[in-house]
Length: 101
Image 1 (cartoon, helix red, strand yellow):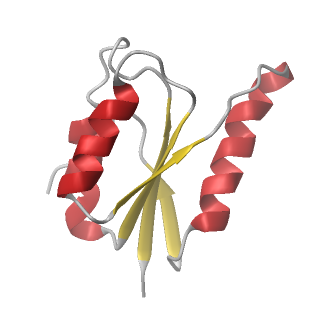
Image 2 (cartoon, rainbow, N blue to C red; image 1 turned 180 degrees about the vertical axis):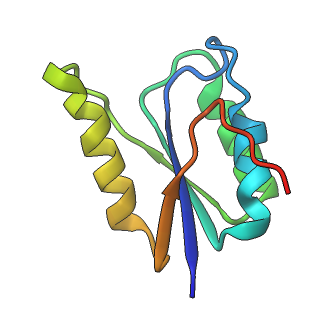
């Protein structure tokens, strides 16, 4: 059984979110972790690429977030990440959600 974690994120640095810590906290229990960056312009992408260089389980994707009604852009991003997942089980981790044992 394989497990995939994923996170959509945009401007996590300027938002003050502990998104790197959130990702690192779940790496012991996942086979892969997918991150969709929604065109961040605050250094979030750079921080993510550095993290992915250290942790090979982390896979990064740039995804344009189109403003639309009812937050459909977020739904489309989540569905895209799920379609890329190799896990039998898939779960979302938000940028401010740090797991502990």
